Length: 449
Image (cartoon, one colour):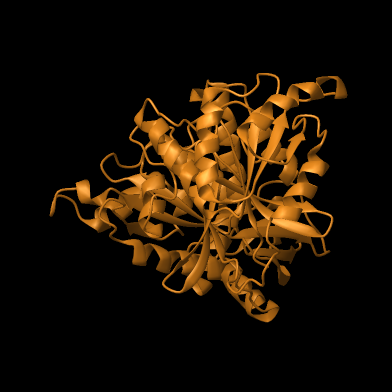
């Protein structure tokens, strides 16, 4: 179903993100007592009885921005207002109506969308007389709420449901969820905007501009995707400011929600230690991976070969030797087709299943090529079954499950890849007891001849 879109707007620090989190039932938007925390448009689903809508959290609206970042935020809010079917105008009832809110009200009247005023921070009935000042803005209804405590939120949703259009039948599928990850200022948001062909996410040269994970449904070459643009991930030891710590946590959660992660690297800087940490996060999350070497336009022609860069990536990130490497320029819009070819391949490979008989043959041949034993007892593979996808996970019933050394496990994974590849997808092996004499407990190494 295509749900109606409800945008939450208001000046900074009136509780918009708190209300957004209350409506969607989880902590997706950052909440902190600092004006201007939310910068991009955030989307979530609100469910009330049998009615559902897409709710949009926006940054604090400044009618007269004083900086480039604030001006970009203002444009994001205006776009959210344009695409919405209904607007929730959040006002701090304790502070009353300010000149900024009067200016916002004038803009909302020109939108011709239904507007509901949420008079926030009314924590008890004794504070409800403070709501009267909100009627000066010229919108009805005015609903007193406490987003923090949930007071009045059900009444607010009843009013929104009455004014918003009914859901329609959705034609397009949801699509593959692709998380764009990387350290700050490598061009993640610019890459998303290049794919979309519009300024969907805020782009600014200052590192750390994106603080939230932003979901964007889109269609590229006729195929649907959901792009997740995330805050730049720094090494944990270097994340000192509390707000940035929350951003990193949400970026890591985006890895858990996605199907394919695109690790963005800066071609002008090469692979850094921070890149390795981020790649490790994505690998540990078990997500299919594609590496995008961005800003390739900054590399002088004939200065370095792509093959040499690929070799450097695999040398610095040996645990990602299964991930394809692509070259992009967000500024010039080049390399996007190749990037999404690899995203499609990695996503499909992560979902691929193999038959038990085929798997048993692969692993038994691997053990025959490189026998192993413990205490004179040879390793034997009794059966193999694929038990999961994303990532492909295989359960091997063997006679020595507790004595397989990590190096031999890596050899078995490489043997599987040699036979079946699984490009772009990590592979997991589980070793289970199949019975028989186990021998002494020590790491399993190469068999003695």
